[in-house]
Image (cartoon, rainbow, N blue to C red; front, side):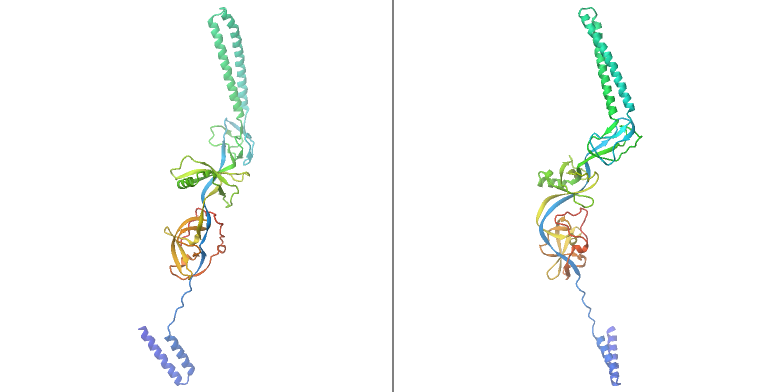
Length: 409
């Protein structure tokens, strides 16, 4: 129906054009002829331009393979300071957070009660010593008399027993003196190690003692300092198989601000068992800390160079698409045609990803614009520049952060 109407309109325009020419209106005739020509022609839609994508070459080079573990820092020795006697706290002799020496006094408890107990114990000791001297003198007199049968055997036995009894009393009194002296010494609470003393958890005037729930403070030796990490059972077995002496593997430490700690570390200890709930083994890495810069409880990202992969193929992580557990890469051929390939990926190295299978050195892969392309599509490639994206490329061998999954497109 529409075609018939178009033909009728064309006939009308032709008749009007002929009539205008016969009446001497050539301009109108030309206009109607042009309108007729425009109406008879078919409109052709222009093909859209190929999408612009950013591409980069597959790079082949030798790269070190690192393993990374997130852990926490802890003191080499953490001494919990508690009161060993009960009394009122009268003095704090250290500044919280400062370095203290072994034997340095940290707190003082009121010593008067303990000084009195020591004095009393010394007096009792003196009494027992006097009694012992008297018993010794009696025994010395009775022995020669007993030898001459001048006294009975019972008198001799009583004298010997009295001497032994007073001697044991002297020893008991001497022990009481030592105990009282120790208790008096415990009123001056000292640091058992060199380290950094923490914030005091008791105030001047508090009644402190062994039954306190919380400690007075803690002192941590931080040079060297330990970084505790949890290694999976699989990683543990792999390291043991490839490195018979894992204690010699150099360890690097990345701090919470992203800076690399200048001192290398080494494996110092491993727990006796693998945690059955997590399947991990707790390990301790020692790092030198000469300026006490690192403190217990700090964030620690520990990494170790486990191997070096020869001739590895690298592509930016943005070029890899994760589609339901399958990894895909868009490859651009020399004639700018797109081929979507499945690939097998390996370790992440900085912003890049090692591709074990599916690519060849020098091939061009789509980094930005993978959502625009389909297999066989023609694209307009342009070089990918990481600097333009505000993410400068990391040096080869720099490990990626563990929590960065591939971007899904």
